[in-house]
Length: 123
Image 1 (cartoon, one colour):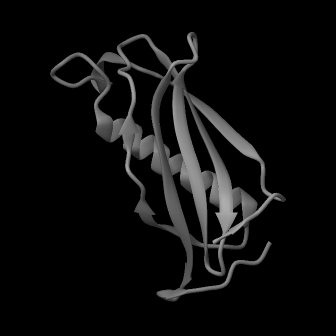
Image 2 (cartoon, one colour):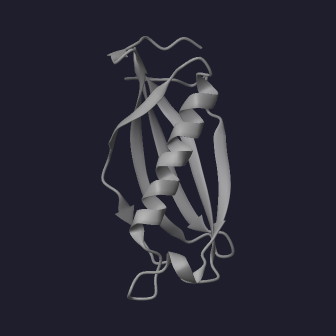
């Protein structure tokens, strides 16, 4: 994939960590964070390439760098980092909104697919 300086748009959403999002240890269950990361990777790719039909090909290592607890507000960011012929790589990370402390960091590769086949991306 090639670096793409024309795609520096950063997307952001927030999530309030409610008690139903907590695991047995009282911290955010990783599955919720992974779902939110997948949503944000899709959003960033789809907004960069509105005519594409994206599927998630893979996620890189999902680094949970610090816990989140009930009442925390998490800011989740996504940004297309590079673009290939049929896919793009999207960085996704989250921070505690009040402190700025990083909660997780990963990347996703999103592939444009039509009729079950990879299809070239067009801006």
